[in-house]
Amino acid sequence: MTKRRTAAVVAATLLALGSSIAAAAPAAADPGFCGVRHAYQTPPQTGSGVVYVVRNQCTATYNFQVFLPSAGKSTGTCQTVAGGGYGYFASLIADPNWQVRLC
Image (cartoon, rainbow, N blue to C red; front, top):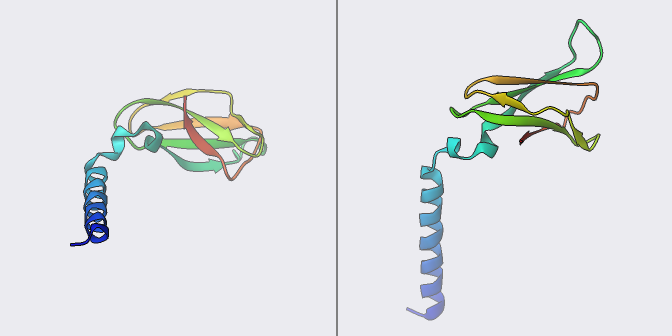
């Protein structure tokens, strides 16, 4: 076997091994993966402002915050959301590109 072919086989083996290790790790171990966008809507009672709903899809409890890229700031609150639960964040700014962040 040539050196080039040996290097290719070693690289392919490492890539396959790395993929299987990453797939075996539980997603719940990554707190950045736990907070997901669930919904955002204007409450019918007020007609102004927006409520952003974050779902914690992991079993552990984490603190989340909503970041609004269009305004370059967060909703200003950090909220504890139990595993499998929901957090509600209010803002006067509607941003369809909102993000969930750990805090």
